[in-house]
Image (cartoon, rainbow, N blue to C red):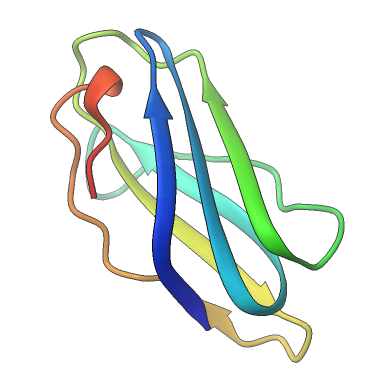
Length: 93
């Protein structure tokens, strides 16, 4: 369900992530300094194909792990495996 293409931009203390699903879905991002994440963005209000989520308040110089999560209209949840980032300003997949 999740498209392999994603887009990301990272600043000193924020990041934006975008991705496309092949079915309409609601989405959110789990993120944090460990693989336990610890933070989660709000779930999107509507099911869409294109998802853009902004992460604010990140600590510069801190590594962040994150996971994109999408739930389609049938309730099926999908999340690709994400590689950890090295710093907030270098979110990497």
